[in-house]
Length: 232
Image (cartoon, rainbow, N blue to C red):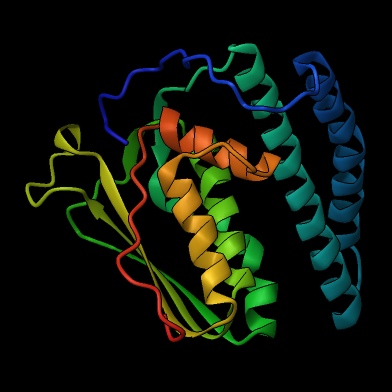
């Protein structure tokens, strides 16, 4: 992402998905109504007197609603991709807030699996960037979801910095490096998923994988895998 990135219209792409874009948009819209209702009730419950167990239950339900919201957003983006009506936004956003918002959805699962989640950044990194912060959060959420699912104990460290040593974002955007330290299960399966995202191949992609691939391509995000061993 660059401070000077411009909103752009996406190029047409053959996604291989057979559902009409209008139907996908309707599904996304219909999902949002019950999600909003449940989220509102959760807020009321959280403001009331609850036991520790009850508060844990409401937090779990709240996270499930958030996941459903990400799914609704992904379906909506898929409809736009199908219909060639999707545009990337270009407005200031707080990169650390976006990272924390995406990662906060996995605290309960990380605690259960004894995974420490850490975010740090270079001092050169400005607080505000220019770009599509909402879709970056959706993209990071999908990526974090895959990584946490394949980890058992250890640490996931997210380090963000300017892509080049000068700190000039207009000359290279930002670099988000994710380090996994600990026990990684089904390493070959995880590598295959990441390699597919990296290669941008659409064949045999799930719809969730497809949306990630297209967002990576349209946002000009480069995904690199430095190494992947059973320990990180």
